[in-house]
Image (cartoon, rainbow, N blue to C red; front, side, top):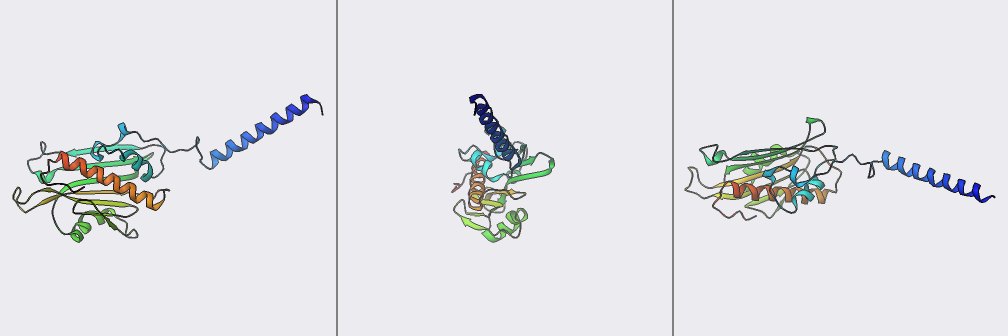
Length: 212
């Protein structure tokens, strides 16, 4: 076979292989054709804190989306006369805005109580029933599933405000399932909840040790 024809056939085979590989990557959503948006620290809600684990945890936990829109809301003591009104909220929407909510973090001041009433009042509203909670060490109590994580951490001592001791209640929740490993997702949600609780504990000027 003439050398020129042999080179042409080799080139054609290589080109065909590259096309097939590229098409496969595109249709099966393999990088660099993945539609997943990047998450950068500068884009993340301030109320989620500044833990070094935060951004990696968000990348693990959040469902895939071509866009992540972080929306931050803080209600601080300077805005409200009652310390119990302080609240820290983060919402993450996907490519369809409010129609594709992916994640919610809600931290507030709550009267200290035993674990079960706290779970029923603050965690369960964000938790799908089919996802059981398991405890982990954080604050007075920490609980997490593969869709939700919550921490109840000491904040205001008894005697400072009428009613008794008050805690920081932090709940983070996925609004839809993701494609990550269940164990990785649960650990990521715990990292996010811990970071958000640390931020709120500092911003709310809590006097009691957080035990985080």
